Image (cartoon, rainbow, N blue to C red):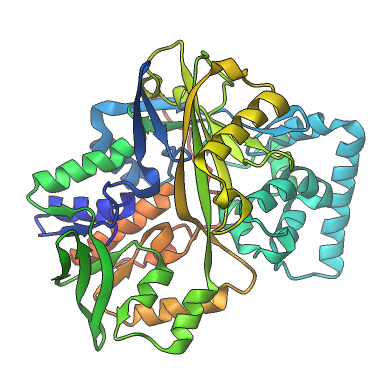
Length: 477
């Protein structure tokens, strides 16, 4: 259920093993949030990812799978990600020397001092880390939190950081803090640190090619991908799923199988169970929320806007949160070297000011920010723009989310032949590789192995570094 890269990975692995498999997808396309949109213009074809998805992982098996699928379309891309902060550029993820230099010696000294006080206070009188604000201050101190994390985080989530759970911070920056960053800069930790962020793998024609090629292989193996086929009901008897009812252009139909894998939103899955779960489960589903994104995709008569693969914009007066320049990922993303494009991301919720803006208003607002506030382009360089709306893009870890989530997962876990995968399906803010790993392991479970999907993305090390005992040999492995 769901033809995002996680669901497609499950079907791809099962198809290679000769298992009859059907993929059900409500949308008229595969790839979900990780698809590539193609737009034909008088200048030629532009390609846009929704927010951009780079491939990096610590898992060698996943790397091999990605290479196998993408094959001759594989590119290696140097990553430059920065924060645009009060007219200055700061490396992202934070490199301490660069960040302290950007804020000046006085503020840098204050940042180091108040971080020291935070550590002393935590040692003398430990305080539970509950909120996102607590977690960032615990890792980086109050000054760096306010400068580099608070504004952007509140733009992403639409809520003050003291209302968001600290789980998001620990999941995205495990093992990182000001003291570990300084320590590794001055006295490197034993064992070579291999950065997974300096370069990454990417399909030449956009990240959506990963899903496209898996879909081609699934169909080539004689299996079925049914688009425009939304799951309306999941029928259960005892501790098993016995079928699903789907909506199609020809009306509702029932589909039955021995095993089921779901990457549709966990909250929706709970609500479409038949018979319906208890009022407690339905209330738990209502208690969990997602955050939407809208991308404004601009086509520009300009060779380059910035050298960045991503640029994070913290200014509160600028409504969008970040953008990427597809040409910096692959030259195939634009028709010619004289042209470029931007994918500009707005974070929003149903019914709020940004979500309620029309396509024309969003494009015009984006151009004004880029021209007047940032000075990155001129109005005459814009040759076109359009929007893509992506509802429920990010699970929102609002304080207290753990209890309703645990209750739903307990209910779903009682069904022996149903596995949940992916960011939507598990209500977990995983990276792309983590979501695909859950799809891989779910397929392996059907093939007779035994894997705990909850252990994916559960290690304690920062997800963008990998420590190895020996230096990595020349060449990428």
